[in-house]
Image 1 (cartoon, rainbow, N blue to C red):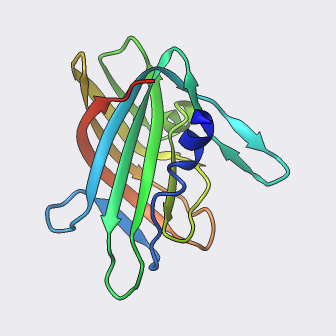
Image 2 (image 1 turned 180 degrees about the vertical axis):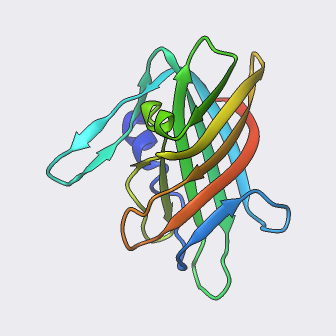
Length: 172
């Protein structure tokens, strides 16, 4: 049951009624982000061939899994229009800093899913941009996410995510 919740949590976040969003950390946007990481975890790949998509459930493993959740709040000129997305990726467990660029992002199963009140997207791998981080202490990381995202379908189009934050641990 935990695996199902971890797979579909990012999908069920929020939806936007407008297209072409750039999510960038800024004091005047009113958007918020939260960062978490999970030790002794890994991202699995699950193919749903009949349905035509893949999911990336989290399970116990030998890596660190990072989560960046962004909530944009309410958009102008739309009703019931809250929206959000989640960027998730993994890193080797024994590192103290990392930088993944472009093709390295997919190798670390970096992916995103967006959603909102009425619908969302299935997780999509990220192929362009940079994600980096460094360990600050035994219980925190500073992570930078600056990635370009692809359009999954006509529900919503997201162009980029630029966020930075302190990651706190999540425990099994």
